[in-house]
Length: 162
Length: 174
Image (cartoon, rainbow over all chains, first blue to last red; front, side, top):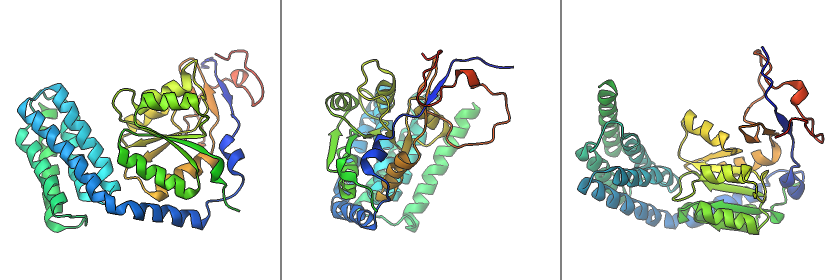
């Protein structure tokens, strides 16, 4: 059976290649890029703290008034932190934020979501940034993150089965 | 011989100042002299209308016009200044459903968070060296969504008569 859908396939001009020429990324450019990130590294903790403050505010707002709007703000803050924290050398915060994203990504369970569990995630993130824990293998923080992930998985499983 | 980055104009759209700063710093370090920054999809659209951009990095999640909506608009809006510009989506979303949604919006490449100099470099090189053909159907316009060349054993839905070779115009073109 053939499906006669009209389709057009074409190759637009490769403007990038035309401008950049044939070549490769020079080693000096790679080193400069890594140096550029190193130069910014001193700012990373401050940047992460800014995002953590936003998450704390969103968490407080949700605990105070649980509705779809405050949940969306909380999810957004957790989602941003998940991406940003790992970029800025705080992989453990990214891990905990990722767990919080899993918990807050779906409103089909009805509201409010377990407030204590949300607060525990936020408290864990506050401790990680306070103690400047950047090593993902830090035993206490890793165990705490694993426990939060387990609790979220349990909650989701329970409600998915319901 | 090394790439010559200094003629490129790159637009970086992300509502997070810190990620914008990081991506811009890496691009400058590569040698890009013109990096235009936007804090929203709306601002990115305005900048795109006022400047010839060669490459766009756009965050998925932004207040107002999201990166997904922005990408769709770039590809399909009648007044789009450059429907063919390569778009790299910066995202923390890596689930297959989300990736498919972004592909459907016309995104060329993904830059998954965490962002690093190596990952930015890899995406830039990919859009330069592995350009994808564009596809126009009734429902889609953008880079070909078939990521890899794979052996295809099913029915051929891309009817030969309707496929336009480069430089020719299709009788069925939308």
